[in-house]
Image (cartoon, helix red, strand yellow):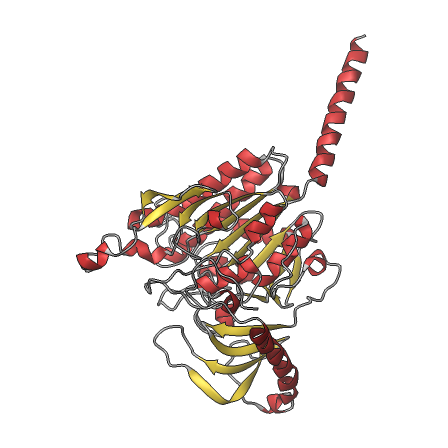
Length: 478
């Protein structure tokens, strides 16, 4: 009798477990997207940094071993354009975000007409949250909860504002006209409100709070029948580079070592939360950065590339990219195929069952087959290189044709080449030898590059870009 009862209990538990497992497999995958700030290509151990930069990065290196590591993942050359391209799947020049209109009195960021990654996920039933740096608009109508996120916490603008909070060199008349320098919090349908003063002490603390909220969100949503999209645009390693007190001096190798330990630890906490809730296998986990390092003396390390952000060089445009999706993306993959941050919108839409607008030009490409290993070739052959609204060049396969060049993003003259120069990015990764006999025999590259460029320029005629500072409501002319 006892054995029969136990058998029935075991059968019931088995049915529950099998049913739960089946539900987990049928449920669309969750998505966690970590976007670092000014975090260059060469910082992680899996990209040649780690201990060489002052501290190992074991959690993120393990993530790379468990998923796909891209060596040619491209972004736009500065913060706002990069975030605009990521959210919309479009070159930032199209959305009016190739430059920032801050200080002009005009609204900056994404118009309501743009369709964002968060809106795509929301439209197919995902719960969406963002904790971190937005930098795509700092007024009502342009904040994250106006662009598809159910909730958010963080900075409307950027980390450098923390150094303004107690700056006694700012005249009172100027300060009176400045927006509050605050950390904001908001929910969809409600007005975002200040929850903390964003000064230098808070600057050191905010990424810990972002991590705490991310873990809490995962714990809260793990048992929901809805999948989630969790966007974590961390504020490090943007200036001022101030580690949390828990990591200050911990590496024994200075600020960068401390920050690497912090970045790796916080990513590890988010990964551990997924494991603890038993949902890691049904979660796409992405780690990347908005652009290369800045132009300060202690800038992030670009690895084998040259250049800072605000340039068209590879040190500006190539950043680390790791994606893990157990059972779908083969572990241990490494590729030098060209992928761009704009590709994430159509790729994730294809996975989540979302749709992409057909009434506008979308520059992103669906990379699902490539990331899953069904093909070793990325569908993307090229990237148009903008710095601000200026066209600096075209990257095509392993070649780059440059029309303009600056060595660093601030205080350096822009060189305009009377004849475009060609760089072989395999044999000249630092873009230092534009003229050589080898390149004479490869001037044929100009043909496909100009075809690519002309096709792109025609799209700007067919669909004129939104002007920077355009207010809502925006209605396309065509």
